[in-house]
Amino acid sequence: MKKIQNYINGEYTNATSEAWLDNYNPSTGTVYSKIPKSASEDVALAYKAACDAFPSWSNTTLEERSKIMLRIADLIEANLDELAKAESLDNGKPLSLAKAVDIPRASSNFRFFGNAITQFASEAHESVGLNTMNFTLRQPIGVVGCISPWNLPLYLFTWKVAPAIAAGNCVVAKPSEVTPMTAYLLGNILTEAGLPKGVLNIVHGTGPETGQAIVAHPKIKAISFTGGTATGEHIARAAAPMFKKLSLELGGKNPNLIFADCDYDKMLAVTVKSSFANQGQICLCGSRIYVEERIAEKFKQDFVAKVAALKVGNPLEADTNLGALVSKPHLEKVLNYINIARSEGGNILFGGEQVKVKDHEDGYYLQPTVIEVANNQCRIQQEEVFGPVVTIVTFEDEAEALQMANDVKYGLSATIWTNDLNRTMRLSKQLDAGIVWVNTWLNRDLRTPFGGMKDSGVGREGGFEALRFFTEPKNVCISYAPSI
Ligand code: TXE
Image (tube, rainbow, N blue to C red):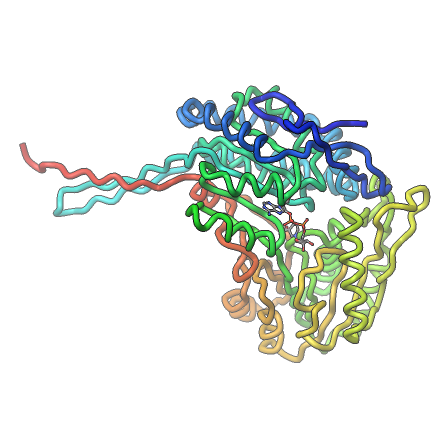
């Protein structure tokens, strides 16, 4: 059986303990590879390699760093087919999605930050009349930790490690133990691209063991994490006494506000995607639909008809719209939420049941599920499900829509469908969300800030925000004699 290995100091190695975890193919429900069960001694080895590499890497010219990162981007692109297939098998997502989105974006992450670092500048402040000049050095932090989740495995892993190394840091990184395969395959690409040994070290294992060891390591001074809100809270508690810099991208329960004056057909097509792309396992999915009463009946009918036409099936088949959920425990969690919704009086307009896919009977498949809900306070409206489940609630006017949209603990993203410019501005300013999309969804320019408010996280990634996170600003103040 295939054995995934750690990538430390440019070499593939087993965990020191030689212990292994099972890795499942969610589309068949079978174990298909083994993952090293790394512990604190493996994190210590990765830290040492990173620490040794830091003096040289942080002094490597921007041009050279950029060149290596662009080579990594090219190699990801050149290996698109292999990586996309690996991602699909590991995660359960449709191969078509991995090919169109996940792997191209992983390549773009390296290309974007490889270019961005050459344009990254710092400020200078002349204190006129005081004869002092201030300038800000933006120095790499040293060794940083990156911990990523399973929903967009290589996409989010590279979203963190690319800015970290672009800024001159060395990295100890851990992909999710649920989807470790593409981060493992990246090791070969890093070597081929000529990334110096120790700059990026990839350690596999569970969150509570390997992830915790990264967070607890006293010399790893910054942690960039994407994952569940409860894990983020745990990491924040562990990191706070050591004053670590933290970037936390956590859960969402994003509202999708549909007004009667919107471009209906475009809204309908995009709302199907924003509800069910990647089996609803994207922190940005619009899991709470609020629709204006005037068009609610028509919308429900049209939406359910479109959802009913989606094909749940083998992720490798070209016409599959929804593949498998990522794991058995996750499938059970989502099914449990559907039952909670039922018991709370939710009206299932479509779905709600597991799907048996031919020749893949043990895979973790679930129908896309649409639930009409009367009460904004019930659990299905308030808690992150992170699966192919969307709720519909109607509203009378803008004020009511805004009130319900903001009435959750999360604040990651929001979508507004309207052709009223004044409403667009009013709502954009008042919605509790780090990202607002108007008449679109998941449209990303990598220069823009990305992150959430409230329990959706702390800090922003993307563009220069990420480079600022991964650098320490140091002000230098020089006093000079104005005359000789
Ligand atoms: O994520 P975890 P889980 C949400 C979603 C999902 C829930 C739980 O609602 O159902 O979170 O998912 C590592 N110290 N999101 O349990 O555990 C872990 O190994 C350090 C939203 O799978 O947060 C993995 O690498 N690290 C999210 C990463 O954290 C720890 C995407 C994320 O796993 C750790 C995924 C610890 N103590 C889930 N415990 C999004 N915002 O996109 C775990 N990890």
